[in-house]
Image (tube, rainbow, N blue to C red):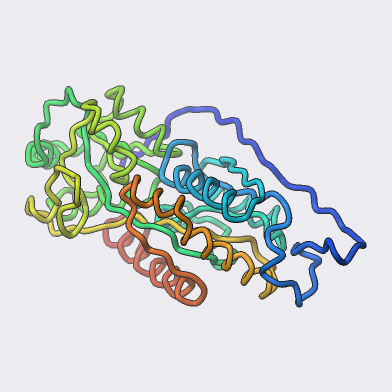
Length: 339
């Protein structure tokens, strides 16, 4: 399988808030030194920092920016977002785990892309090392080409893909991520050897979009919301979506409607660092519930066509475990990791 990475240089900004101690019990904060009796009402007591383990412009970044707006409103505390791109989020994941243990004001957006990237990159850090807080959204994937592309429909693209797989370059997110998995499933469904897939990975949706619009790749794969503005502007043509049924407001057939028995969704969640106390975790979850119920978050769901997948606590941990097993099975099945 041919996989290429654009040679880009990234300026990675890390923001690590200062942790101060205070002897005044009336101003106690819910930080790593808080007593177990600290309540959710005390959180947050300082700036919330949200790591996006990808480049700006993609789905994780948009999710974090929507969180930033909603959290600033419901908590009356400042919320900051910073990006740490690379390796499907696993570079950011390692940084998040190693630097922020016991710090409840540090959060990270992640999702299905990271689950696959952990496997394909053989990451030394795993999702069981973070504290699950809440699943947030899910959405279907889109397959699209530049408006000037010769491909008017998916059937034309698939025909050329079957004839010469390496001639079709697929632009998407990280190796082993949801975009890559979808291409692998298409190859399997159409009888193409997955080792011949010409997949060009990018550090984030913004980079992938730029590659598609500049004709650096033949076809792009990403979440529907990431392509929607360009499709509406007429600069990209949508060939298919990976949903089980047609999506409201999206003028494109599903893969299933075009003879490919494939459905796939891209979910996103928020996690906290390791080594948090139960009261600290409960406090963060309580704030996420307030954010979820806020008008700003509900409007973000609507504007981005995100499907509401909100779940917390034990339901989220069970979901993450199930997704990890399912992703490993799919990656083995399409030849992205060894069986």
